[in-house]
Amino acid sequence: MVIAVDGPAASGKGTIAKALASHYGLPHLDTGALYRAVALSIIRAGDDPADAEGAARHARMFGDDLLHDPDIRSRRTGAVASVVSAHGRVRDTLLARQRAFAAQPGGAVLDGRDIGTVIAPDAAAKLFVTAGIDERARRRTAELAARGHDAELEAVKTDLIARDERDRDRDVAPLRPAPGATILDTTALGIEDAVAAAIEAVEAAR
Ligand code: C5P
Image (cartoon, rainbow, N blue to C red; front, side, top):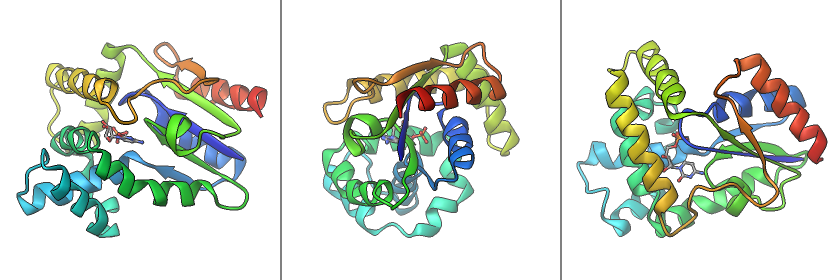
């Protein structure tokens, strides 16, 4: 069984995807980490994220150690990730790895922006997780502070709005709910209630 979990930044999709993976005993892939690793590779090399061909080269070459580097969670890396993820050549390079993960026998849970629309359109269950911008900014600020990254609420909110716009307005794989996806608004839900609602939606879909 493949479960696709999409949604904007800090909507709760990562937490929900992890909880679903543990509930169903499935492997989980945070696909945002792939785009963040490409971004960090570019930042460290001092290269230009706007250069599509250069960014695609980083997407082909980055070392898997970057996926576990704490710096992939910084505000700057998140902002650069949303720039490099608009390049079709970067997305194409990362596509095979994500499709292979989804094709594992037994299934998988993947979270991102285009899992239900592009990576796994035949997923057994598709969730689109959202939350209001103020709540998302509050969550991301707390998360960044807990990881020791600089985090000021208004600045984080401005970043999130800019990333949402870039992710929605790009030509390739724009952020939008997949046909048939269940919309899950977590604004007023604690983690336990959000996970319970997600499990209910998966049970109804599969
Ligand atoms: O989910 P996360 O905030 O870690 O993703 C970082 C950036 O990577 C997003 O803003 C988005 O631009 C990009 N991304 C994407 N497609 C995915 C996952 C992430 O374009 N499947």
